[in-house]
Length: 307
Length: 217
Image 1 (cartoon, helix red, strand yellow):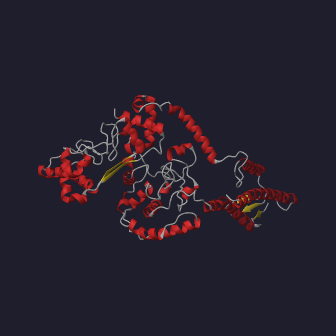
Image 2: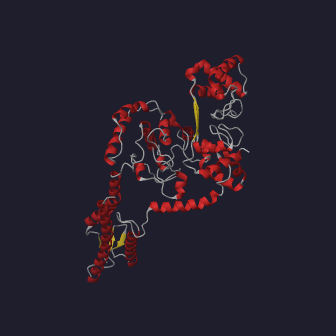
Image 3: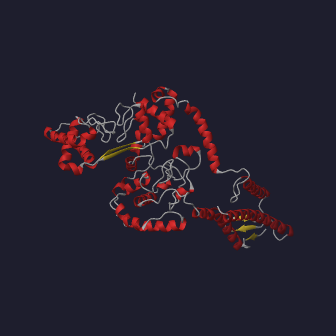
């Protein structure tokens, strides 16, 4: 704030306050003098038909509480940074208050969190208190996608089972939470062509083992799968946790709800869309949001879920 | 005892009331405007939003997201633990209008960028309950069907340039090339795409909502 605006604020603020105080004092005095001189009667009233009101000076209680407010304001100006650039006697700032508050907060929590700083993820998973803190962190940052209890939902992995996209070792879980993961499946529509997509779809349906399939198409699809898809999904479709590639041979599917798929054509529609258009799967990185010990505690909680 | 009328000095009453109210404005608003104009380059956070994100911001405005969501993190630990570092003046350098909001039925969104995947935003906009149990947010399923033609984006960007030049002389403005290319970036995309781009605040693209402990991008 420049000098000019500082003076501008001081003059206007103090000016308005003092003018208001003087005005009401002068007005009350004026009315009382008129009553004393007999120019005005305390019983005079305004008459607007339905509404009538006495025309009297305001009661002293109100008048003095008004003056009290003015004094309070002056005191406030004196202690707090109310007037332009003047810092006030207390040197209060919102930044200072926040810094103080967060230092206190960190000190308070460092004490309870640092107890777990040396613990490994499996130890945290077994320690009820540490696990409890991990659970609280989970509720704040994770449950919007992974749902309460880590049960997951369509598109968001279930954390309570033994199936891991990116590996379920304590180190991998911690890495996933802190760095995030990006699973990328490219679009294959242009390369495979409509017929190719259909054949690969048939093969993937066969992998799921849910519905009867046409062996001839499956054979063609298998050849294409081994040529194009096996680089990530592995020859047998078992996936690869190094790349976050899902296992296509089990019952745990992330982007299609296998349980509620009633018929094979619906499953094929979903699969064709994914194979031809590709799919990106993102777990956001959390290192910016959650500090080190909390990530460890969170990893401990998640690790405990799958046991 | 006789009826009287407030016949005296009624003009003065009007003038005084108006001047007291206006002085409040002069004390509160003009210095703020001046500090906005005097913002240094170091204070300005981020870059002007790209074409798609301007459209997204306009969807945000139109659907009234600001009624339930704020974009203003106050400097209290209880807020910063949940939402990220406190909002500062420079965060709003490119916001016209600034979408501070005043009521939180939903959470603050000032630094929501990058916190959820784009996929999540899509699901959440179409059916909030499918990912967030017990959420009271309305669904916005029609956004996926409204395809934008981008007819207005160039004039919107020019209007933003005018606003930047008046409110924030040190702010960056859109180049003529960006404005020329803008329609192609918007045409054919849905309003849902635009809103998600705005909400997600992609790390590689300017504009959109801020990231949590880094500043706005």
